Image (tube, rainbow, N blue to C red):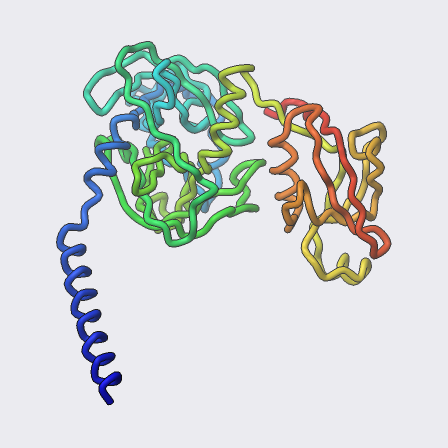
Length: 355
């Protein structure tokens, strides 16, 4: 009885402490310190674009809308429109990471910092398949974003979206990570997005998605919306991937991607029945002659289910992981062939530039 009474007392004490702590935390909950760390490095991009330029495919898609706002000049013979977007300062040298569709076909760029300074921006390079681009400004004492680890994100983590929606000025919204590795959305050739319910709207494109440490974990890119406004489903490019693209663009002016030389097919019920296969993976339908895959010994009918010991779910995984490798790097490809597991070491080739 004594032990039971003592346990009851301690339970009530712990409940009281928990309630008091939760109340105090709720009373003092604020993201101000996070915003102070992250917001100075987020910039507004005003682009002057040719009116005759082809519209980004995101505008034409009835469901996916990009985040920049275009206001046509009133004159009927006006040759340009002005587009608003966002970007993130990545280095003291003035390099800014943003979306390709923000700077596509631009004539002039005006970059505005949170502290009120304005700079002329120059497009360094861009990569349409990933919808990323790099802009540069020349200035001193430039704020720089702290880079986070997008691989460490988990569903449910709190994140903040920072950008310039509708041109009203820098705005911060809060939400959570709703999902990770969102693919097959038809937005870009290479996908693997962070999904968030943090409110993002036209003008946020190219802006920052940050964690509670104020570190950059993603570049806001697109929303799922029938109206063009926020519906609580937004997508950001993970900074780990975006940084690889940015480094290539700055160093080489283009992105170097690995290439296997295979034609793939995702599994459907018919293919599964034909191959009597129930697991994850992707079927090799064809192998290009003299390709890295052919040289390594991969054959049509092989089922790739691991790359560098990571489980392959579909063709998107293969495409993403191989293209992140450089020419002459090695990839360990594990396949099922005739119900047996085989491991091949492929020296990756170079994929031709895709525009």
